[in-house]
Amino acid sequence: MKKIRNILLIVGISIYIFSCTSDECVLDSETYLKLEINIVDTNLVKKGFLDSLSIYSPFWTDSIHSTSTGASGNILLSLSPDDDSTTIIVTSEHEPEKDTLILYHQKELVFLSPECGFIYTFTINDTSYTKHLIDSVKLINNELTIDEEGSVEIYF
Amino acid sequence: MKKEVLKYIFSVLFLSLVCFIARGQEPRQKKEQRQDQGQNQNDELFVQEEVKEPLQLKGISFGVNIGRFSDYVFMPDRVSYESALNVNVSNKFYGVIEAGYATTNLKKDNYGYLSEGYFVKAGMDKNLLKKYPSDFLGIGFRIGNAQFSHSASNITIESEHWNTTQSSVENNAHSFYWFEVSFGIKGEIFKNLYLGWSGLVKINMTSIDDTFTPYNIPGFGKYSGTVKLGVNYFIIYQIPFNRN
Image 1: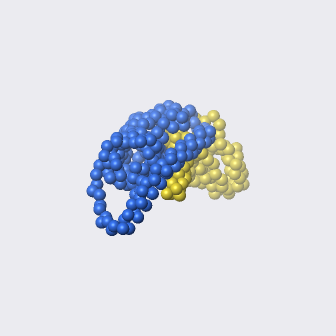
Image 2: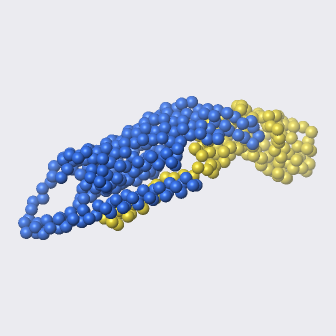
Image 3: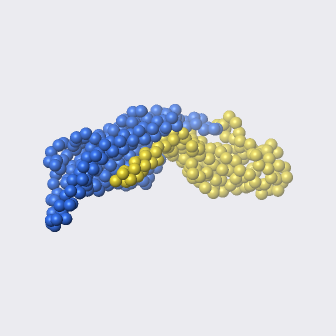
C-alpha cells in the first residue's frame, strides 16, 4: 500500500510539472517568402548582376541587398500585411533598367500561441512582372506559415 | 521562471501534506487489519458462505477543487471555480458530476484576450481499495462539455519592413467536448472531510479552427489538438448518513 502510494505521489508531481509551460515566445513571429534568384543570361553573370542586386518596395524606407554572388542566390522578405498584394522592385547597380514583381495574396490572422500572440500567414494566388531583365517567374510554394517559407524562383 | 519554481514548490508541499495526512490514517487501518485477521482465524473454524452485498447508497459528498485557488497566485489573469457532487454506491462506485466556471482576461504587450464560459463533467469512479473503504484509491472517467466564447483585441503585429498593423478578432462561441480518464487518491483527514488529488488524461473530442485556438477552455485548460495532462486537488465533505 505504502509503495503504491509513493508511486502515485511521484506520478502526481510529474503530471503537475509536465503541465507547466514557459511564458516566453520561442517561435519566429513573422512569415517569410524566399526569392530564389537564378541568372541564366551569362552577360548578366559577367557584369556581376547578382553581386549588386537589391530589392525594395515603394512602401519601404530601406531595401534588401543580395549577399550572393555568381549565378544564383536567395533573398528572404515578408509580404505586406496591409494589402492583398505586394509590389517588389528588383534593381542592380550594373543595369539601368528595373523590374517590378507583384505578388497577389490572401492573408489570415493566426493565434500562434499565448506567449507569441498573433501572426499573419499568407497564400500567394498569382504573380505578375515586367520583362526588362526578368525572363520568367515560377511559384514553387505559395503557402507562408510558421512551419514553412513560401518560395518563388526568378530567372534572369 | 520564478512563477514556475513557486508552482513546483506549491505542488511538492501540497502533495507532502496529502502524504502526511494519508500516514495519519495508518494506525486506524492497522487496527482494522488486526480485526480482520482475528476474524480470519474464526473463519478457519467455520466455513462461511460468501455473501455478496447488494449495491446500496452509502453517502453523498460535495467537493471543491482547491487547485483552482493556486491560479490567484500563479495565473492571476485566470479566475476559475470547480465543484463536484459524488454519489457513493457501496464504497465501490461513485457517480460524479463536476461543474465550474472560468474567465481569462489576458493583457499582453501585443494583444488582449478575453474568454468566459462554464463546463459540466459527468462520469464514474471505481474504488480499487477493498480493505479501507472509507478512503479511495481508484480510477474513473468523465465526459466533459464546455460552453465558452473568446475574443481578442488590440492585436499589434510588427514587421521588419512593413507598417505595424492593428487588428482584432470578434467574439467566437464554442461548444467543446472531451473525454477524461482519472487516477487518484482520497483520504479522510477529519470525520467526513476528505482531501485528495487525481491525475487526469484529457482526450480532445472537438476540433477547433486552427487560426484562433482558445487560450483556456473551461475545465480543459489550454487547447490541445489531441491529449492533455492535468491534476485536480479536491477537498470533499461527505454528508454523514448510512455509514457503518
